[in-house]
Image (cartoon, rainbow, N blue to C red; front, side, top):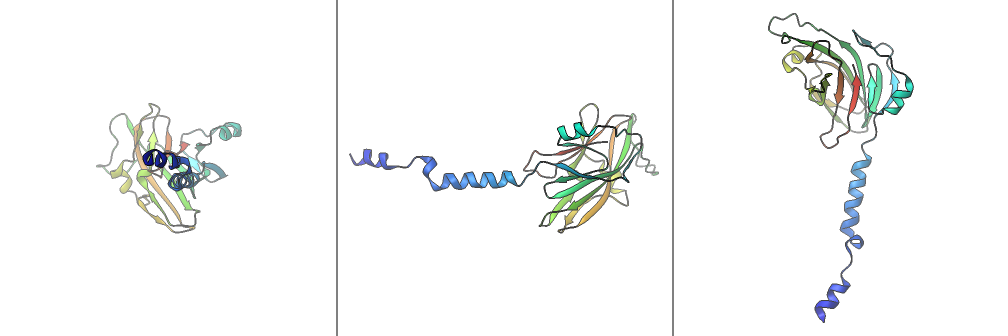
Length: 192
């Protein structure tokens, strides 16, 4: 009798404190990742050899896809792809793209709009070609740049502009992927 009365007095799992603590933690973590959104446009942005014609209705429909010059609010920061240079030439004999490929130089600006210090890293970016292959930066070419994005920290209100180089199939259409958090699958995609 004692065993059966003890089993009856046990609370269901949804009435236990640990269950509600887990739910609150999951909600708190999920709420810190906001949907990326366009908050402005940099009129001085340039792109060599790429078309930026897209109507504003399609920009509203695709909340994760943007264009060169858009100022994108994303997880407490602002990202702007300021300039894209196709067929970039390093002018160094030991830094050349492979046959059938080209170097593309991408200049970005990141601004910390959050209340806390944040990290940035050139390896948070990938270039997707028209075949759907998303490649990391060409590290040798990128680190040869005087304005390489590299990696570091930004204090509240801090800004960093820097360039990176991608080796892609020559003439391919390109999209820049920016995914700064290992813990989230959210990313920003910028049409280059």
